[in-house]
Length: 146
Length: 473
Image (cartoon, rainbow over all chains, first blue to last red; front, side):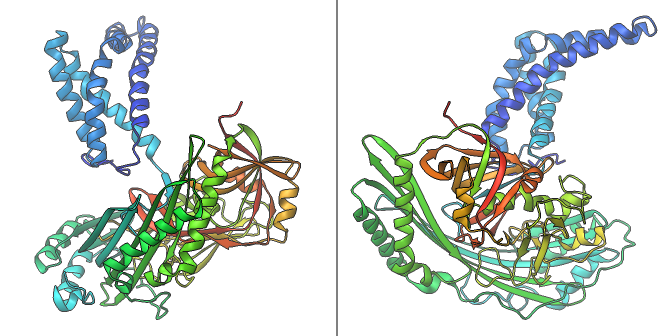
């Protein structure tokens, strides 16, 4: 996996793939939140401290879609622009997510976007990379090439 | 950049110095080479009677690769100089680490030349090419009053390759490429449809500029457009499909061919991994990858690692008998390279890629195959497609297809997509025609960000139980 460079092709990264991956992570975070919360419940008797921490993370993840859509919406055009130029590696996703999180932190009046922005976009990048991995294509040559 | 032959060791580098830098990079490595390239190409696109694009590109550079085990270090530059080579040597060297490798045997060269080394762009002057495209435009418009738009593309290029091996071996290949495409849009009663046809290969433009070549292309493009004018929405569902000969071989290329490339099998990400010697296709199915067909778009005298191209049988009578290999994957899998190590340019690392991939013909008369199709689709033309190698699932869009019921070809259908997975489709081949044909020479294959010219081919085939995606209820 590449820090800077997009591992796949530049042009074929379709906006539908980008949008679908964003929706997957956006909704997936809530699903993960439910799983983590259930896990916390199971731990509550044996490991109370761990359960409290997991429960908190679960709640944050569960309700994150209420706010994270703003971040994804801002990120999408930047991601599209970067991917077209083959500069959407996981490192760029982390930087972009952190930057957007930093912008949203004072607006939403919570520190969470700063910490969650980067990982969210890295997760989205992983979804895209998984879908694109091993994909091959066949097409007529572009007009300007023999 | 001049038009003089590409002689990097006479004009840019001292061979002894270059060899020394290469050997420094490859000390303790398993393999590697210095790949030098000059590429020139031009394209003229006439759209609606006007020159839309007229481009000329020229570039040169080198790529230095050092391979140790599964790791490959690669450094490339558009500046061919001793200083750039020294920097590249240090970078590529990083992959070798502490070394300890044994340098693989050099590729066996070949004196075979599968195509001319003449510059295809020099076959005619710029004005002549423009006039030819205008002539095509006028000819196509005169064919039918419903023609409202004509687009014609004339493109040619020359890639000159020189490979220096650490043993001091030098291998060269000069690869011409030419292509002519014609696209026509027709309008009737407010409905617009398009049709396109093209052809090309590793030869000069002169062959493509003959009226006896381009006039049939224009007529065929018009025929496809007119067929689509009458097309109905494609049906949806699982049904039997008959594929026409030639260009529909792109399905074979994508759905099966990529799954038989060495890298995907070594990493076990192919649906065909670990099935060597086993039946993976219906009896009678024999698939080859052949880079040695003269003048074909996918042919190469030597691959981009210096290995002579070959006629490789990958599936024989339904049994998996071989993979397509570059040098690194061949070594790691303990087999011989097959001449399939290809790269898009000097800026790209080589990997196993197809050349001309096709299925051998069978015994059945194509008309009999169609007559045996009770309820399905007859797909003749495809626009392109893609496959996910990990599960072999493919999606292809048809540009010309017909509904068939009780063996009778019915109305053309529009917007049909064929969906399936390569492994299942191979087992579901129910009939193989005796009309093997190769494509007209307009295919490009994309893998891991690299596009290379390829050829495909097949006879008429009937495949059972493919999913057809369409808009009809």
